[in-house]
Image (cartoon, rainbow, N blue to C red; front, side):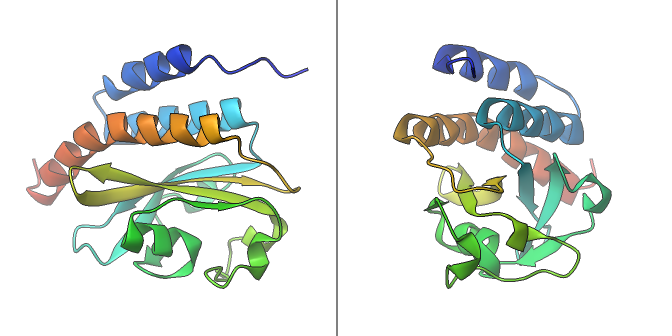
Length: 170
């Protein structure tokens, strides 16, 4: 039986991860935490690229071989749609039937029935997207979705600052 999620403990772990010095380490910790709590088959953290035209996969439970290589254009697929509109997408079954779904060569997203995609927003700027996927239909409880929104809000500020430093080559 799966242990109940303690929202305070999750937020504490997110804050602890944020204190990490390296962006990739921070993203990997957040991704691992999301995977553990949601019992997801796949997770991914995408970050806005330097030009603001795409999001790049920077951490993933399942797709670690393409971390740093996979780019989704803003507006492309579910992830790109979330990056463009700044609104979460919750699909509990048949994700590949959603009109926003886009097949990406080398990414077996059509194996997943359910999809939760949450924007990472700093102020009014979208800096990334968090994805959670399950192979079987999955109900994403409202409290869990709210928890990820809060977690992403905590992550957004430090992440936005790190993106600026990367752009300035500092």
